[in-house]
Structure formats: structure tokens, C-alpha cells
Length: 241
Length: 302
Image (cartoon, rainbow over all chains, first blue to last red; front, side, top):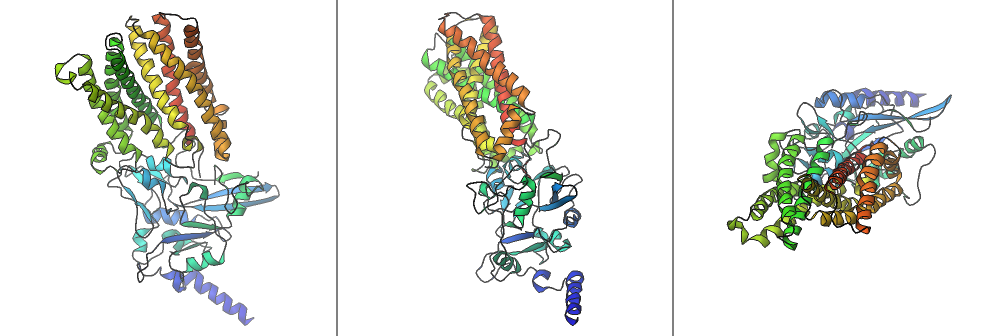
């Protein structure tokens, strides 16, 4: 019984006061001689599909109506009454070798030293090359600025030591954000402990956003088929992952 | 119910909206036609200045005219058209669009010089070889850049990442250039050189027919997404324009007419027939650009 009580207290503190050091503050920007690589793990086992991330992102970044920097995709599986629903929170993958940066003719899209891929919308000419080059459809045209737009990992927040808005607002704590290059960070420990997968790894873009439990999502999407010959160790891509 | 996507946020898809739409298709078509006309004009003027004089000069004018329509179309397609000028100063060398803009500008300049050449202006006559060679480099660059822009974009779009898209687009440029010249020449009532143009296009069209088949076949066997894209082209939303516009109007009928003329050794093809078939070939090339550009984007990736 005391264990239950202390557990509940811990849960309440964790939930309402965010009293977890490593999540409260993402840490210093540059360690001693070490380069930061921001990354995110989305634990699909904890996602309840509430769209708090989508809404927080929209409010934080003033994303225009009709488009989203962060959104959640639903896939249904099974036949009534035995149905389940899988969620897939989506955002820009901030790839290690981003194809959008390669094709941008004015260098408006670039990769920061800390790994975040961002758009300088004072340079963007709106040619939409990056939108055709993104294998994850993470980009859209901002109707207000008339330039390319997408998730920035909330770099304006990270720089002040805050978490990205979607991570801060996640009810189920399904999102873990941090420095992938720091072996002691929560995200690195999470990646070490759990089997993580990237979306469509065959593109060679090497996303910095990892998913846990992607197999179940893909299984729901394809109706039981989780892998295709020749793609061992990776979740096979399909048109709609 | 398995695999039913019950909620998603499509950024572009759903109502035929794609990042690269009709203006890009028109741009690809016109820049290809400009490049093809220049190549045909340069080849004609290199091979026989007297015999192919009409072809060389029509090609030179067509190239410049296409560029003059094409560049405004490309600029208008931008969402920030007035920032177009930054492309010239801040161009990233890894971006195909930067190369395309430089090649387009070069082709425009050398088409102008080529017109001077065809009109026999003394000042440019002594630089004939230089003008034709540098112009040819620009023309090949323009015809290749459109395909390279699609090809290197991402591996996730099987129709574009297929290497066959590059020869398909380059041959389409040449076909369009030759067809446009032969349309203008035959409409003006002249017949000189028409049979040579038809002969070249007969070979190119047959080759193109095989290449398009190869492209769709290899794309469809490459991945699940490729199968979906090929299905969309062969039996889905793009199937009508594909079969009617590209296969029948743009490839099979012209191939049959050109080859039957070729095999029957018709020395002087009828101008009216040539004009009609050339117009059909142009429609076919436009539809080909449309199908590749839309077919690559029509299957959402998310």
C-alpha cells in the first residue's frame, strides 16, 4: 500500500509539475568538445492520439489554418467488433542527410550545427523543390509567408533551454527529446534500452526522429505483413507510412 | 478495415493538388521544345547549310520563342516570383534548379546568336562553331536538367528515381523540337527537309515507345509505392490521358505513319499529313511530361 501511494505521488508530480530533471531542461547547447545532435523518440505505445502536439505546435508556431507542422495519423485495424486503432504522430524528421537541403536552389533550407533542419523564409523563393524532395511529406506551403514551412524542432525554444512545444504538451509522455550525441541524455538511454525504428529508412535520409512500436502501426497499415524480403532490420516503406 | 487510414493531414493531396503542378509541366514542355529546336537547328546548319536552311532558321526562332515564353512561366510558378533574381546570385550548386536557370539563360543567349547566324549577319558568322557548340551544351543541359530535377529529388518517388526518366525526357525534348519545326515548316507550305525530319522522328519515337514501357515496367516492379504509381497511370486516374494522349496519339499512330512512309520510301511526305502528325507528337510529349510529373506525386508519401 505505501508503495502504491508513493507511486501515485510520483506520478502526480511527474504529470503536473514536470519534476524530472532531464525532461525539465534539455541541457547546455554545447558540451565539452561535443557536438549536439537534437533528436526525438516517439513511443507509439504511449500515444493516445489526443492531438495535443498538433494543437500546441499550431499555437506555438502560429501555423496557418489548414496546414500542420505536427500532426497525428490514424490507422484502423481488424473487423468489428475486434478493432484497434494505431496512431502515428508525425513531424519533420530532421534527417542527417536531408534531401530537401540538397535541392534548395537558394540555400534557404539548411541544416544547423545542432542537426535541426530549418527554412530561412527571407531567402525562400517558393519553388517547392523541397516539397517534392521530402520523402516524408513533412513540408507545406505557408499561405501567409508564401514560403516553404515545416517543423523546426522549436529551435527558438531549445535555444532557451525549453522543450519543443509538442514534447512539452504530450499527455502520455510519448515524446522524448534530447541530444542524441550525449550518451547520458534521456533520449540516448531510451534509444539504448528500446528497439527504435525510423520511417522509411530506405530513402537514405537517416531521420533523427525515431519510433518505438512502429511494427504494430505498419502491421495495421498492411493487414498483417510487417516485412518484405530484402528489408531485414527495417520497417518496409509503403506509400502511406 | 485493415490498413484503413481514418485520419491524416494531407498537405497537398486530395483535390489533384501537388507541389509541382501544371505550370511546371508547361515549363518542362517548353524548355524541352526550346532545347530540341536548338539541337535540330544546330544539326541542320552543321550538316548542310544550304539544303536545310529552312529547318535551321525555323529551329533558331522556335528555340528563342519557347525560351521567351518558358522563363516567365517558370518565374510565375514561384510563390515568391520577385525573389527569382536571388537564384542568379545565391544559387546552390547541388540544386538542379540553379543549373537549369543558368542553362536556360545560356540557351536563350545562344538562340539569339543562332538567329543572327541563320540570317547571315557578318559579325557572328566567324564564330559559328563556337555558337553552335556552346549552344548545344546549354541545350543538352536544359533537356537533362528537367529530368535530373525529378531524378535526384528523393528515392521515395519510384517513377522519378528511376534512371530511365532521364533518357525519356531528353528524347522527348528532341522529339518535341523536331515536331515543332516540322509543324511550322509544313504549315508554311514548304517541303524541304521534311522527309529528313520525319525520318529522325520515326526512329526517336520508336525508341521512346520502348523507353516509356521500360520506365513504367521497372517503376512498377521496384516497390509497393512504384506499383501504386504505375497502377495509377495504367488503370487509375491518369490512365485515360496515358493511353489516349500518350500511347495512341503521341506514340503509336505517329510511329505507324512515319514508319509506313519510311518503308514505302515516300520521298516527299504530304505537308498536311506531316503537320497533323507533328501536332499529335507535340500533344504526346506534353502528356508524357504531365504523366511523369503528376504520376510521381499523386501517391501521398505520408
